[in-house]
Figure (cartoon, one colour):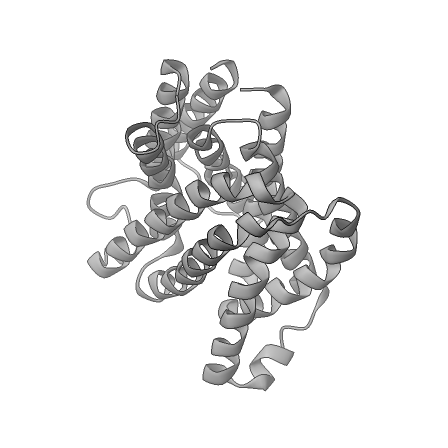
Length: 278
């Protein structure tokens, strides 16, 4: 993997973990998420205009990613209502690169080196180890939440593969705004209808603006990496956000990080290293 691609992937992972941490600390996580996306779009739009490029061929891919991103937001919210974040987040993010690797290699014929394949599997195994299995590994142990997390992983894999193709017809800066703005507005309308405008207005704060900007910047960095690196490697490298989030939880939220999570973190680092040299 090119060093620039690795740097972009790690930047994306840091931003993703950061805005998830802020979402987790928000008074109303759904309202904060719904408001952050359109605010982020407005704030980053001026910076995307100098490199804005959109060709006619991009629209079928954008239509597909709109469906997948909207499903991602809805399924993720449903999963968090039924299970702990410590179950949903690592499971969804950890299995996504494995799905991408299988689809990219078997269905799309996109080549993946043996080291990159090992890296993908290492990252996936590492994030699952961070999450833990067995009795008491998850707070709720809800099977419905686990099933929803698997569907979230499928949507992540789906939009990763779709975006890889769609970037042939648009610049990463234009694509990220178009890809997130429409699902974000749909989600905002839905949450406003369900919770009311007062709940949305209550989340008008600087941290919500940062969440929005971090969403777009992180996604944009990942899309830029997709233009120069295999999709499975990009998807797997982004999963290092699980380890970053674990460190943030220990430092910021004062959560206890035991030997199992530390071992998982080491395995993820090894997986990312394999991606870098592969």
